[in-house]
Amino acid sequence: MTGATRERGRMPLARMLVRGRGWIALAWVVAAVCFLPQAGRLSEVLDVGARITGSESAAVERLLSGPLASSYARFGVLVVGGIPSPDAPEGASALRRIVWPLWEASQVAGVFSYLNYPDTLFVAPGGHGTFILVGFAADSGTPDRLVPPLRRLTEDLADSLRADYPAVTLRWTGETALNVDLRRTSGMDVSSAERRALPLTGLFLLFAFGAVTAALLPVLAGALAIAITLGAAAIVARAWPLSILLQSVVVMLGLGLGIDYALLMVSRFREGLAAGSAPETAAEEAARHAGHTILVSAAAVALGFAVLLTVPLNEMRAIAVGGLLVVVVSALLATTLLPGVLAALGPRVDWGRLRPRAARGSGAWAWRRWGRWVTAHPWPALVLGALPLVLLAAQAPQLRTGLPRGDWLPASMESARSLKDLHGMGRSGIVQSVR
Image (cartoon, rainbow, N blue to C red; front, side):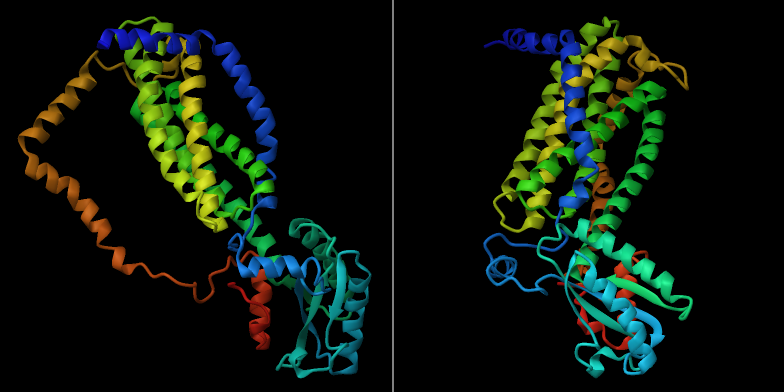
């Protein structure tokens, strides 16, 4: 088959994408309506701890929540500060004012404190403060539904106790509270990183394109790819346990590949317009040539992530699912929706131009000149290109694997502050901050 025949064979698909842009845009609107609301609930369904499907520990967790159900199969630690020691009558009285409302909470299956077993373990060495072990009811729902009402309850209790004990603090910690806080903090950090990165990327593209609309299109495509992927991942996570690492992977790749794929399509379209093609023709050419490159690249990346699906660890599976989804969504956005948008915009893609249009072919001439220099001086070019890579690779021996040490939890988390309170009491071993 000749090259011309192959070109004619590919033409109908590119033309169909451009001329059917209205229906394609409607399909993406429907997808956005379905998936975007789910994206906001993603953190509620992701796991924080590592879990291995079929492992012995996973089987034990199922037993503790089923046939061997216990009031303390799931528990939290309420760290109490600012009251007298519970081995004193006044301290025991204050402790009762906290324990009895906890017993009556529908989320609580059991409460264990100094009042149940007057052991010195419950007494802080300094004489101020104690802690309470609180078992959670089996039907109390997910951690994100369990912890907030209990925190509201203890906040009200602390307000009522401050008249007698101005320095009183009631803070939750333990695996469940830590998971809730880590999910919320991770989600906030990811959103914050996205808000910082998108404007910076937009400024870079504005400098590269010299036009506001051309710079905004890749940024919007990347943001939409991230949002739709997070919504799709939330649906998958309800049936397949996934780690919270998924959020970071999706945002990282969405900002990288999502913007890169759209950037390639926009650049090819602008080249077609600069060559004198009509908007629809330029969009078809961009869909045919840039689209082929995008799909080949996306297929290679997606294959790498697909292999990770075979690993039974939920953290690796989260990386695989997040990477696979965002690559597919980014490639589809760039190759189906964007050509139609570009055809509709036409010359308006250069709206908001900040500098005069470069002479036709000037960019290609500059790259040809650079290519000639590289091929004429291969060894200097190799040294210049390899030097930063060698400097980066030289840092590899500094990597340290293993569990983090020291104060590594975010200070804004209530559960992290509670761990510090326990450490101050000399009782930090009650809660494992690292599983």
